[in-house]
Image (cartoon, rainbow, N blue to C red; front, side, top):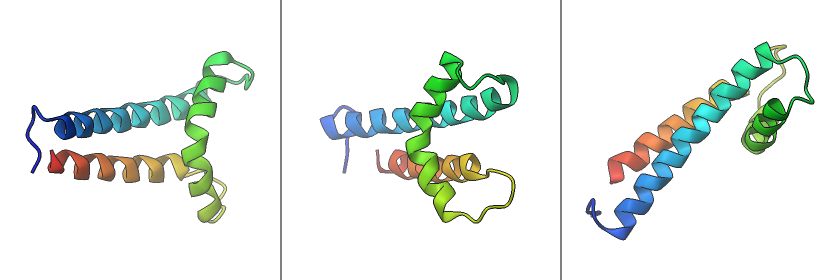
Length: 89
């Protein structure tokens, strides 16, 4: 059992927050891919570099359908993970 003031409770809380921030970065990448047409843009490059380690393995598993659904799958998996960890706090 974790107590809110305990070290493990705090670590879990921080982990949940990091996952939520990562979900926001994935969402920002999707929006940026629609708006920013220059792949050399520093903002787009940052978003690409930080989110690609999660999106690339999902993309390899999924069949090619002409539309990249890996951000949606990653968002759902990370959201499920964050809810699971939050329930353990």
